[in-house]
Length: 271
Length: 84
Image (cartoon, rainbow over all chains, first blue to last red; front, top):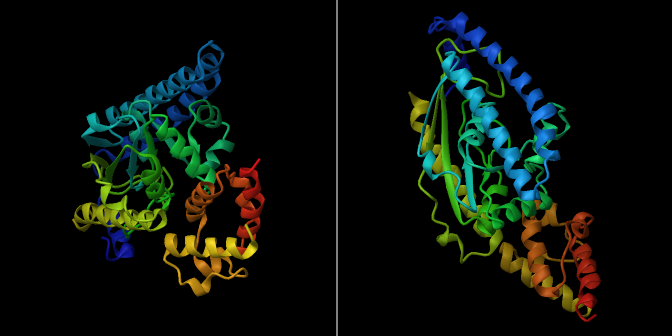
């Protein structure tokens, strides 16, 4: 599939529709409608309550993140129970440590949903366009997620969050993976890891068959039920990079991460 | 610190951080196009300048920096602050 995306795409569409295709279509539509309604409920009711309840600033942030996490758990439960998708997450007990930077590849629209739903109280570097989306802006602001501009300000904000002991999620690809090739990482995550992370933990995400990619709208559901597999990898040893000057270290770490993700994800992609 | 000393310091810093050819580091050299120093590298560079000058470098200070000469100007602005 990696070799020839066009052939793969046409094979994809020729595959007979199975796993209760039409029901899955309805389940997916309903789940996304529920997501919209849930986001409105969270943004218009729950988060204003969090904002108004007197509490320390950190406490408010933690509550906002708990609300987001609960809402995303519900969304995943809905997608899963209705049969829209199936998923498996291994090693989740190693997510959510203080100062931990979690880096994941980004094959689908909803990767961040899985990670935010299962990494306790984590912050996240999120597409900056979502700050202008009225459905999501309130949540992003109160939960203090960080916009993904490739600027010194982003690097500083992400590093500060880690130094303060938060867990942080980053998608080094910056956008969803282009079909039929390995992930290409921007160096920002590697740089943040070396500056401020106590521990760097990769999460390998694969989706089979692919769905909700950059090239597909939500309603073009795959012929078979998509299965999301998320594997929390071993913590990355950063000591080898500590003796290099920072720019060379972040380049070396970024290249090593890219290679590791490609090697890990290469196998399922060839099936 | 004189202009030439600062240039010398910047040259040494860039050579050490980015393993550049010292001859490339001239005042007219553009950081991004000629030296391949991108916005992520700029953060590492800011840290280094901060260490050297002892005064906090703001991302805004770096906003208009395009060339090595701009970098010298930033250093000249920050260095006296240390003696205040």
